[in-house]
Amino acid sequence: MEPEATESAVTTCFRHPKVESHVRCTRCDRYICPDCMREAAVGHQCVECVKEGARSVRQARTVVGGRVSAVPLVTYVLIGLNVLAYVGEVVRPQIVDRFAMLTAGLVGPDGGHYLYESSHPSDYHAEGLVAGQWERLLTSGFLHLEPTEGTFGLLHIVMNMLSLWQLGRAVEPALGRVRYLALYLLATVGGSVGEALLADSGTESLGASGAIFGLAAAYYVLARRGGADMRGVNRFMVYMLVWLAGSAFVTSWQGHLGGLLTGGAVALAYAYAPRGPRRALVQASACVALLALLVILTLVKISELTQ
Image 1 (cartoon, rainbow, N blue to C red):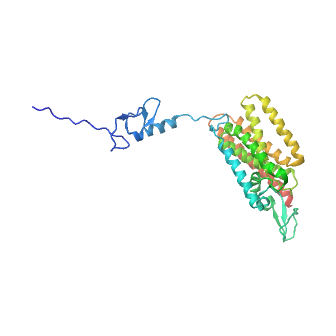
Image 2: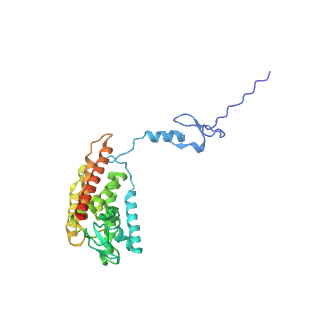
């Protein structure tokens, strides 16, 4: 009597049933084909198990609770935006008049710019914050002196971008990208509000210096919070304070001071918010409250001018 012939079972990939496979996932023990194999510490794993493992790995966090990022991407993007804005204003100088920080001004029928008066002829129209151009609080931080403004015109953006590159590479990884961007933008607005409150209402200002001073304040706060050696940090802050004092003669110390105070306040909220699941909510609430304060201060200033 002939022995009964037996047919060996063919195993196939659980994701691709038509593909023969003889390798099992070391995690779920299902058969996987070469397209579904992923290198593991021992053997191979399937795509689903790799994704599940990635979800179970705890995300590294910074000292303030942000996600760790090795590349300061936001800093590079901000530098790129500043450079693009600079190219735009070189090609079209009118951009500066429209988007630089200006609390109050008048545009005459001849297109000229004049000092603001609450009672002005009908053929003049207001410009600046009093005209509802609130975007100037932010856009002014991405504009710089034109090249035609002498040697300092070029140095303005070069020095600011160099400072942003140096500070950003230290502060962004310590905060995480989202918190870093929020601090930068709030410090920009804070610098503009400092201009509105302390400078001549008809003075036009621009530049990323307010945000840079905000980053400097954050650098100091984070260094103290992290227990760093403060000798080098203190020397750096002395340099920034000298720059702040010197700006009273050549640039806008009001914007620098506003950015410094705003950036310091945001950094303090980040660094000393209580740990726990609500830390991000506390930090976000502090940023919103600070923004509301800046808006209120600006409204008060506008109200004084328009009375």
